[in-house]
Image 1 (tube, rainbow, N blue to C red):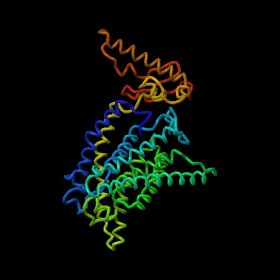
Image 2: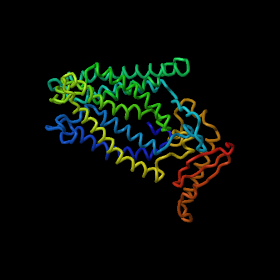
Image 3: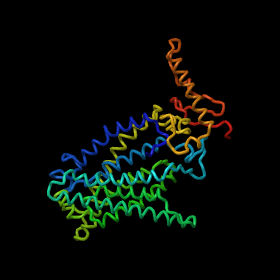
Length: 398
């Protein structure tokens, strides 16, 4: 989602395969396998505790969120988001709102519903004594954290907007992303935190989402759906919250040991034991390092080959049109200049003609040179050297 509206379909297929084939398996084995070096399920876990990530706050969300951050840094922002078509920095970033807030909210509720299976279902079975209570606690904590994150993001954003503009507005996008932030933040500790701790975790998750989302815009990193603040930031926060707030009784019920509870719990026992917090931080460093070492060179290679960024003219007319033959957004086609559509159709015809010549025995092959510095009646297209048009500039534009 982070790369939406500017990433080639080929790149999606390549990095999805690479991520699930080489990144996730190593992290899953290290954290969840009985033989994993970080696993809390080992007979003799690391530092007598092991890393606690019950449903995948780090394994799933931090991994995916960090991958998205690396990818969007290399891919660059959508055309017109932070820079104009000649690469000049805009004074104010241009918002790219989705075409239907109603569908976005519906999607958030579907995700929330699915999270009960994601979190409570991570117990894998309820036939074993005590597992039903663990699953029910996970479901309750999931609900509380989601609601808390929604409320904190909604009202904090309202207060900020009121202070800046003098007008208080309830932003639904901030509300449902705050809800998702709360869900991500509780994922790691849904079975080992008390309900009151889940409320705190979700509330802070909503605030972190707002802060990091704003920071990304200031850094001119284009996250189309705010997946980085929701998943990466709150995946990390969820792991840390376990190291701070994990309950002795809940750890005993899930993992059969409770010598190293959350740091705040150990304070109440007069020990200030930071073992679990230290392990959680080690897990964060391991996941972050593995994702970076594998995915950073991969995305650089993908970008070097020209298989990452979509053609600029295709980006302008919309990837729905270029990949699927039509636009699925309400009124989208009317909002696209007819000049762009005509230019896109002309270039498509040119490519088809060149491919026809390439199949002719008298024509050796279609080359990148055929594609470079091509011009239409209304536009100049600049090639990046990989056969992908980097920038489409109307000739009338200064």
